[in-house]
Image (cartoon, rainbow, N blue to C red; front, side, top):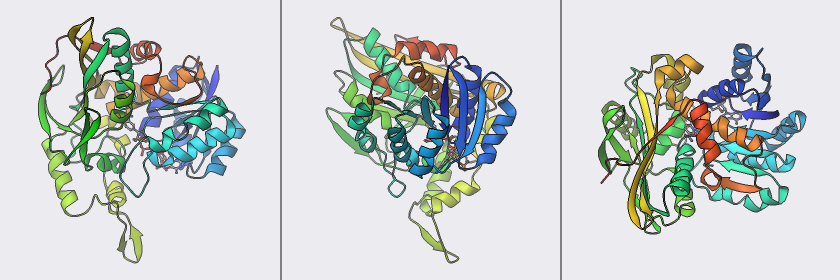
Length: 399
Ligand code: NDP
């Protein structure tokens, strides 16, 4: 039916490419383009020969001209950005220049300040609208499915939602004392930053990992979780009616936290370049080079993830509570697509978002966060493509 250009060929992209090949009715042709072409070729070798026609290319996604040439040559219906958040703006520029729809899973972050915000991408709203193309921002799990869950709760269960707690639990064990489940540089930048949550129309800032809660997750059990700043808080605070507070919690094990503290204390998580043997290096980038590649965790990781949202608000004048979540098993993901559940829970929604844009089921010109679209086709697709959701009307609340 259509063509997708996939940029990046890491952990998340690998899942997306498997899923596009499963969904060949929509993805009749894909091009995988990344910095290291051999990774694209390896996937083509593994998955080519099916109904989805696969091509590969080398691209530096920091270079707008290279991107434009690639897009003009392939003429995709959508560009799916699965490189790093640093490349969001160059890829959006290339989409504008070629009038091509754009989808990503993480908001832009400048390399030199560990601060992610939507303002840089929201600044493209008018230009995308005038060009008549759609940019769908944040089509992973969180952000992504958490926004779809919020839009679904708002559409079907509430007149107004006053409180949202997003809970992200990973009970997977990879057997390493310390490793990150997605790109280590991005992951460590996120968890070492100050925490924050939205309350009564303003941001409340916390020290990193200052707020801890214990929660008994369905199918996982009791876990320590910590309040983090997370990008969907920013858009949900604007897009959900009647919101008074939104918080985001993620679980971390004690071994991860102890190692992280030590690495921070010795300066290994810093993004300030230092001089080393006559060369400038960024300590965090060096750390990334010595840590296990997240894509290699698949065969070793056992256990489940549980990610979801607890909503509280009003329906027909009454107080209502509603919990929507997905449970995903690391080993089942590995058996299906050769990746662990963190890449899987991001890759499946990225494929679904791109497919809805490609089929013009989600079609409006401009730049939008995922909760601004009709959630129903996405919720159906989650059940169909491997991330079935569950609901509860009487969950234990987080204090
Ligand atoms: P990886 O590091 O595994 O993959 C990133 C890929 O991008 C690599 O193939 C890398 O190339 C490529 N790349 C990096 N820079 C460039 C460039 N300048 N030009 C071309 N290609 C480039 O990351 P993940 O797959 O773990 O994560 C991908 C994205 O998904 C990230 O933005 C991450 O933040 C996001 N994410 C979103 C989640 C969500 O729920 N919303 C959850 C998890 C991740 P090379 O192979 O040469 O290094």
